[in-house]
Image (cartoon, rainbow, N blue to C red; front, top):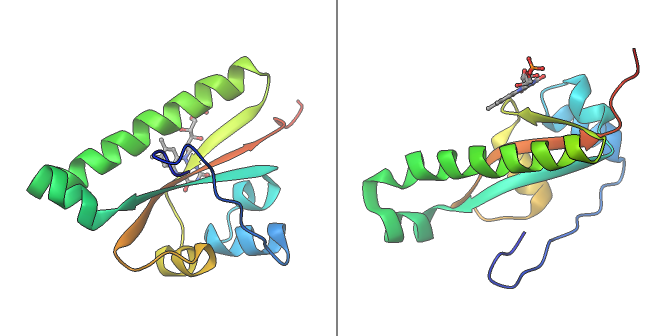
Length: 115
Ligand SMILES: Cc1cc2nc3c(=O)[nH]c(=O)nc-3n(C[C@H](O)[C@H](O)[C@H](O)COP(=O)(O)O)c2cc1C
């Protein structure tokens, strides 16, 4: 998402399930999700704005946004779960974002498993 431009980026995967499964350290949640939100941050920009506290604030922010998405998903009858375990460098590569941007968190969305 690009908050200033009020837009979201879309990324083409060759094989969405297989690649997500790998990026999420082989976790089934990544493979089974219908949609995935990557929470990324511009580290230089955040340090410029918040100094040494930037890293802490970025993670708090990702948590707040993740929680909002989870609450909205539940309200819509969807399933949502956060993923903190992923291959940082490989996710950056797939998203095509530079090294001074960081992936902080992943939110997986989909229909909850029945039963
Ligand atoms: C910061 C954070 C990171 C998480 N990372 C993972 C993860 O890598 N893999 C996973 O299966 N679940 C992950 N979860 C989801 C939790 O394991 C758990 O399913 C979720 O918090 C809902 O818990 P509940 O079903 O007990 O309410 C993460 C949750 C949070 C808040």
